[in-house]
Amino acid sequence: MLTSFGVAGLSTAQDRDLDVDEISHSANVKPLANIPRQGPLAEATHSDLAFYRDYAIQGTYAGFTIYDIKNPRKPEIVSQFACNGGQGDPTVSEDGKLLFVSVDTPQSDPSCTSTNSNAANADAWEGIRIFDISDKRHPTYVKSVRTDCGSHTHTYVPAGRDTAYLYISSYGPSPTFPHCQPPHDSISIVKVPLHDPDSASVVATPVLFPDGGAGATAGCHDITVFPAKDLAAGACMGEGALIDISDPTKPYVISSATDDNFAFWHSATFTNDGNRVVFTDELGGGGAPTCNEEIGPNRGADAIYDIKGKGDDRRLVFRSYFKIPRMQQQTENCVAHNGSLIPARHRDMMVQAWYQGGVSVIDFTDPDHPKEIGYFERGPLSKETLQIGGSWSAYWYNGYIYSSDITKGLDVLRLTGAPNSADRVHLDFMNPQTQYVYKP
Image 1: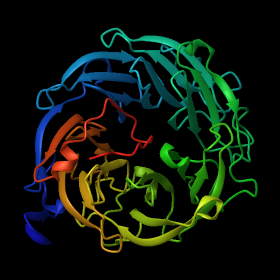
Image 2 (image 1 turned 90 degrees about the vertical axis):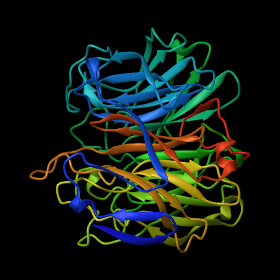
Image 3 (image 1 turned 120 degrees about the vertical axis):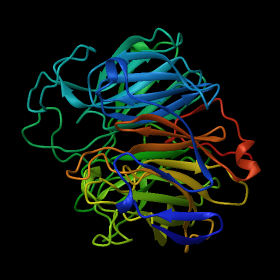
């Protein structure tokens, strides 16, 4: 069954009618390639993505894969590196030589042959692993850095040619966890001398919420930095925060917002001028079916905020919600997840993952009336039982959309009819949570 969406050239298939693994997409989104899970990572949960020139790096709960994407229609695996420890979110240094990987599952030790442990074990390790990927075919393990409560995600913060900082987001404290004690209203900051990564270490653990923050805040899930304005947007479970990062080792919260419709502030994306930010709500933690009539359009959704004021007087002003209009089946986990801006001149557009809701292309130029203008998705993994899968991350990189699918591997999509200005932007590297100003 197809129903009109009200946007020229776009129809929306109700996913409840799709068969297992059946592909559906709008006329303006073309699937170009898929590389399935394989090799030593064939059974691993696939997670986030980072990019350097003609390479894409895909993290997993058991290591990472480096792809050659010089020809996006025919991506090729360059290497795979097995290294146990979820969830495997990657970032890459600006020269493409170093790879940083988050580990948020306690391990028996920091090595790549570690086994899963538990946070109550004082000898367990979790945090950041550093790899040398100068030779993309033969990555090597360099260093590990333990961080409080592990590293659920991390953000690459540039600081000149010789230094970078990693903002470590983590949560889930407990009195029974030796390395994750409550209260945990802080982040860990790892300093990385880029020419001497062996000396990387934690240099600060700033408390972002001295008063404890909102009721559900106990750390942050994800932080997106906007270096041009020395600004960051923190998705900190119970609230969304604007953070001053003018001194990268001493970030502080300028202001924050709460929302009764948000269950779990998950991630953030700035507009290209840094005057607006889109926060996501990962209702159900990514493991529940929330794209349905019962949950409705304002929960498990995006929230669009204007950033008003200057300096420490900046504040977040709510404009509207966005949620995909395609109702999903009850056996599909579906909720707002990771995305990135599409660098279109004079328009605010982004691409975003929704787990088994697929990949959505969103135009929020009118922040009070955002709309889906394209999509790609598969039918459920099962019609009988809820199985976790779908697009974890979907990012625009050099004219193409790359989607990391939890169980299906890597998808490459092409948005036809995209603004020419977006196609003209070519980057040498991209860590999606480090947002530079595009010049389309």
